[in-house]
Length: 148
Image 1 (cartoon, rainbow, N blue to C red):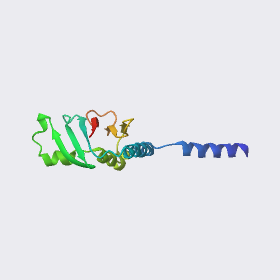
Image 2 (cartoon, rainbow, N blue to C red; image 1 turned 180 degrees about the horizontal axis):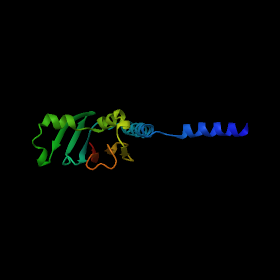
Image 3 (cartoon, one colour; image 1 turned 135 degrees about the horizontal axis):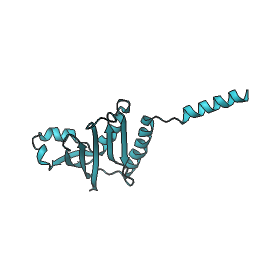
Image 4 (tube, rainbow, N blue to C red; image 1 turned 60 degrees about the vertical axis):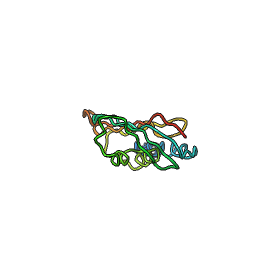
């Protein structure tokens, strides 16, 4: 009887201690989103860079009153893109949080997010669709944050 109880307790413990990657991503998201919201920063600029086999796109995003206001593209190889497309494609901090929250981690082999320790915003969102497959990875990097 003791062994059966012990096995039952261990089984329950193992089930409860297993934390899916999705749950840990969501827990980190909530902690850092709350940190960001406590800062109450409504006006800022931040640089977003796409690091991938897709030639790596980069732009500066300006946010006023919590709304994406302007996107400045300085890369010559993205000049062919209409401004409206670049504006729509860029993500300011709240949109990055929404992207993380809504991303289905079950469809990729790796989904990792790092956050700024002071402000809580994401500094890198790294996605690898299939481990061992070359050139399918993409990282969204956020840097040069400047509150205004």
